[in-house]
Length: 200
Image (cartoon, rainbow, N blue to C red; front, side):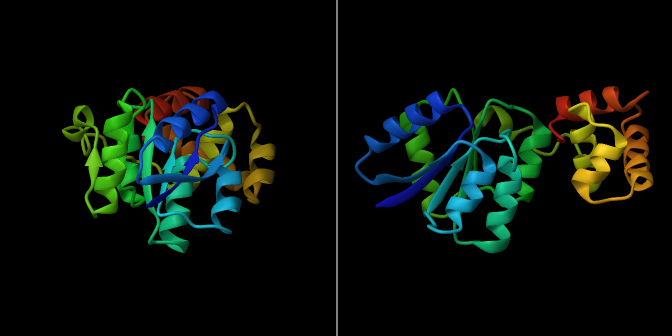
C-alpha cells in the first residue's frame, strides 16, 4: 500500500484529488493539507511514502516543501501537480529532488500510474514539458527570489527586511541585483518577468 499525503490550497480540488486516488486499491491518503506550512508541520509527525503537492500555496511553497523534505526526510518522494507549465518551475523542482512533475489536467489514472512509477524509483515529467526542462536558466539567488516575491506582494523594503530578518539596505541591494539581472526598469517589472519564467 502506498501511503500518500496531499498539499493543495484549493480545498475543493484537494478533496477531489483525494477522493479519486482513494479509489485506487494500492493508494491510501494519509494526510491532507491546504497550505505548505500545515504540510510541513503534519509531515514532521507522520511521514508518508509520497507527497503530492501544488507549487504556489500560502506560506511555504511546494518547491520549498520539496527542498525541506529532501534535506530532512530524503526517503519521502515528492510529486508536483500544478497548473504551471513553465520551464523555470520544472528546473527548480528537479533541482529540489522532485520525482514527478505533472499538470493538473492529467487524468486520474495517469496520476495514479505516475505515483506507482515514482515508488519504483522512476522519474516522471509531463510530456509537454520534458523537452523544455533546461531551456531557461534561473539567474536569481534564493535571497533575491525571496525579496522579489515579497516586493511583488506590495511590501516595502522595511517590511521585507522585517520578514527576512535582514537590514533594509541589504534588501535594497538584493532587489537592485534582481532588477539588473532581469533587465527590468523597476521591482514590479522584475517580479512580473521572474513570475512569468517560473523563477519565483
